[in-house]
Image 1 (cartoon, rainbow, N blue to C red):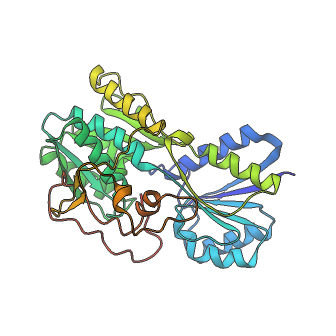
Image 2 (cartoon, rainbow, N blue to C red):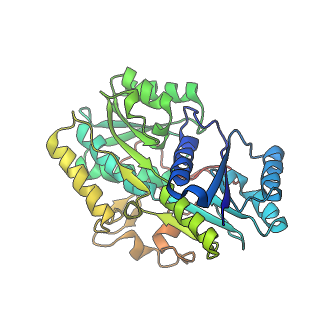
Length: 362
């Protein structure tokens, strides 16, 4: 059986916002890995609207065995289309609901963010780190990044500036400039997946990171590390399950040990002692020896989140894990995770209400 797999992206594949490129790189590797077992097609600039709905229905009607979706903004109408085309499977990145032929997968961004935070905390000279915030819903990344900073530099503090979007180059650049003007000499956070943030940080002589697809070449003298995603293991396992007739809908949460998320080597200019700290943390995370969420953890509202000597898993006693996930994996991407670490300066954080399913949780 040759599995017909369609890949759907909201933006251009080569957009400076490199989320779609991450999926496309995985598609290419999948095709190379499985050869004649799979036939793939890629569809870019697919809106989360009526035109997007029509395309998904057309792909299913044309006989796609599985459709991989790079945005959970498609979730509302995928469920409707899936009911009409039960022989087509739909796999949504960061999806929020399953169905008999609808599955969800996501990456453990917290693990690679933590390692990047270690390097950010160790490289700041001013003790101030700047984070452009997309929408306020990328809390998992923000807190793990801050925990890494704290591991390397407990006295470092973090300024934020909210951009209000995942793709707004002018506002991204303005946010970086404001943070640099405040004295921040390292720029991090989830929006380092966008070229504008990386290039503007370098123009202000700030260190930064890159996220998702590897953009270290943009500013080699300023990028500390890449925290990257490779969806190939998920694609290969999923397509092989479809071919074997063993595919079932599920919640997938991929960790560093699964080979989906990983950090690059620290930049050559990073001091060896700091680079070694980051490498050891990355290895401990891959081996499952490092619990990022061990207390004491307090939020910037002055509340204790995790007491000393306990972990986040210990305090999530009322969280009912989704099938196949732990309580922590279930909790982290949800709106219940509505706090920022006390390293963050500014007004006490309250996660903005989720107005629809289009807001990406990172």
